[in-house]
Image (cartoon, rainbow, N blue to C red; front, side, top):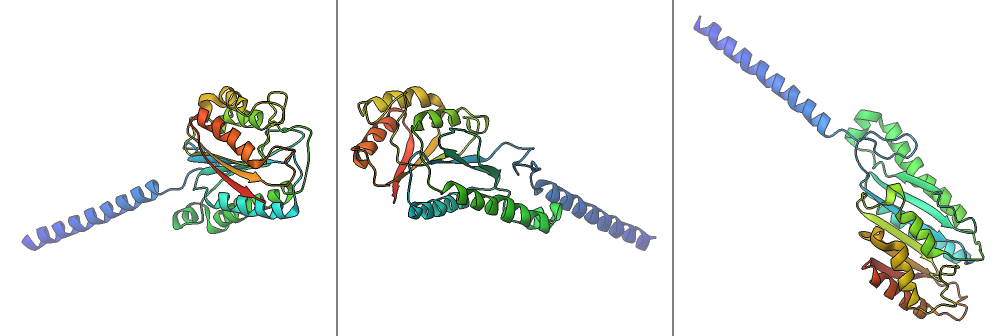
Amino acid sequence: MRRDREANRRYAGFTAGVLFTILLLSLSVWVMRPAELDAATLCPTDRPLAGHTVVIVDRTDRWTQAMGAALTQLVENAQRDTDKYEKFSIVSLDAQQSVHPLFSVCNPGEPTFWSDLYRGRRYTMRDFEQRFVGAAERIVEDVREPSEAATSPIVEYVHRWLGSDDFNAAVQHRRLILVSDMRQNSPLYSIYAGAEDQLGDVVERQFGPAAQGVSFDVYFVAHGRDHNVTEDEVRAAWDRAFGRIGADYSWRQIS
């Protein structure tokens, strides 16, 4: 009788251990499950965007093929810095001035054990390699081609992006990369005609509170056609403008 009770206790303990292990494994699978992704954008549908990087390529002034190569490398680096479930977008400021992205896809993350378990490695690899990395490379091949336009409404174009649904203050880790000669030239303000300190007034009105929390990275395009407004003058004007809105920004040159 005693042996039976001991055997029953061992059996009960073993059963409880098995059930606990199954419960723990089930909980782990649920906790580690990947996000549900939108079929078109690869962005999570069951959680907010982790961040958004927008690359604005200013094609209102013609540049050289060498600059095109630098643009390719710049975009590759920016895309590599985009974390999992963050959106990466490429837009072109050209004669059409459309804010419709040429490319706007979230980083689904490189394949992992858990993503493979839920979706299959063939699909997770395809999403990352073809739809996120490869698709952006094909877009860059198009936007790196030289182009020109009569005006350069840089401030207005950024203003429109700051108010967009997936780049507003509700999105954390917003980064805006400007590939441009930064020579604002539009009816709103022209750096060729207006005083340099007026740019700050325009930027403050157009960007306003919507720019708070945005990291601005300027890649100044030194194309050699400064129209009597040097890079130093352009940078000084934008230094004051970014200072007026308290923006976090960097300035680098590509040539």
